[in-house]
Length: 425
Ligand SMILES: *Cc1c(COP(=O)(O)O)cnc(C)c1O
Image 1 (cartoon, helix red, strand yellow):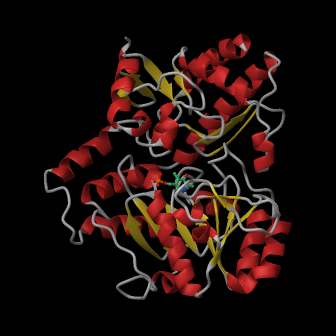
Image 2 (cartoon, rainbow, N blue to C red):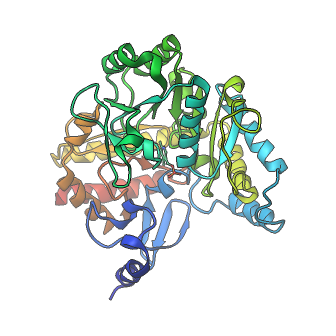
Image 3 (spheres, rainbow, N blue to C red):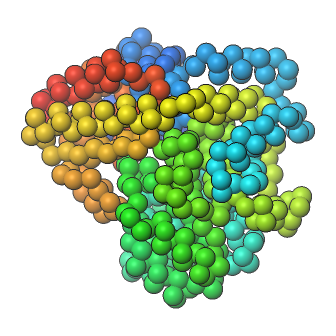
């Protein structure tokens, strides 16, 4: 049996579904997941020594490409001094200062170990600060797997949602209002009805968990206005977009300042780091200063923080995001061009080092439109690219990621593969 298949079979004996995060199992595209043996720059190698150009990038963190020598060195140098202390370190101050210096809406920041922890803590903080129970989220936005966020829209516009996972009692999500992304009227209606009970809106300011969906003009500004008017807090979940869409995340691109920002992925440089931060008067509600409890044994882990800090420093190089955006746009345009030549209904979009590909005409702006993508076509395209050495996200509803090591030759090789793959559809 080929090695990927035999490893998968073995994994399934002791790991549920053979994976430690469900999308890795290839369920939505079919076939055998590739077990990664090593990675370097824009490439990953599987257990059978096949090389792939990687557009998953660990789902976002690998913005400098895999195994960047400076990051690897700093990890090694930090590790020899001990892996974890459960006491404060200077590195934590440095990364907090680096984050606050780069993102103007963040005055104070608390480190955690994942995006899920960041959003869960941010919501507790918003509820603690406002003394209100309800939260607003949008269909198709993912904010990690905390109970109150695993919820999809109910039947009516202003009904509370239904759990998207077994094990989440309806009572746990009774305060979560799920609305349509990019439909400000619905948010206005929700605030009219429940305004005095809403603690916060949590939103991916560019949605990257229903493929890639950008906010329509006025949407983020409208959320800001409503939160201010009703005394609710605006949380931008920039776990994916932070230091990925641009040097100050989406808030820098849009010119809209949230009250709280959540970060992870890029800020860990491939190690487990998350963070949530915002105005000092809000952040000072957290223990030990305030009544909102939040803690973590490995929070601010010295090795992870060192990797994150080294990453942030490299991202500050002059012109980094201009180059990254240009490469990503080149890929998106090139894919759309080749699909057009093959007469495949397709569109593509990008921002910073993120891109979306959609098997439909036109770039979608709503969850409903994204859902109209031709999933069967995507599956065929995914496998046609995979056998040609290009590793795309194994789902039609995930964003793609480009790193600074995806140079012209790598993009061209991808487009050459795509030309054949589209023709094969
Ligand atoms: C990935 C992601 C999360 C969850 O982060 P984990 O580190 O996987 O817990 C939360 N929000 C957004 C926007 C994400 O993309």
